[in-house]
Length: 172
Image (cartoon, rainbow, N blue to C red; front, side, top):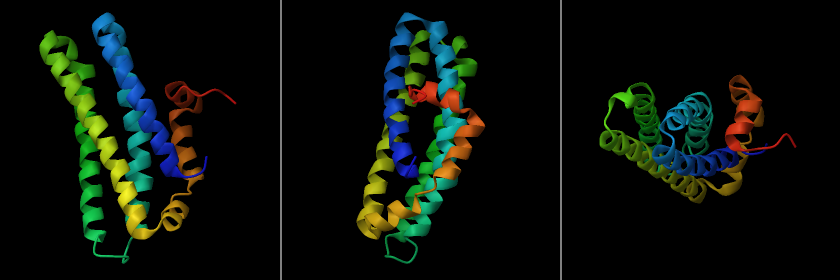
């Protein structure tokens, strides 16, 4: 594992695939949908959000400290992205804990809202990263995000095998 950012991008790719699987399960196997949705929310809560909010976002802000007037924009955007995490987790938890009480139309609406916000959020993060690289320099940003031991600790706390299963990785 090299850059924490590359791990985030790989997670974003995996989440896009997971959302497609969830869409299929929604129509074909509702019980599996709920079980898998619970796994996704747990992954977001235990791995993805802690890596971003606890490791990547602070490093991005710290890296550009004093580089330009864009520092305030970066801080505001990072704050909004952190708030998005709370919204995404709230929507996900609502679906997994109360979804069975909703009629199909409301459940579909909530799921599509969850998926849309998650995808837009991940796109916003990737766009912010590109803006930070442009302002602060790629080598500076890349070197600040070389924190593999900290990322690994988050993954180990979640469970390496669980992580690999979620990410569809092999033991190699």
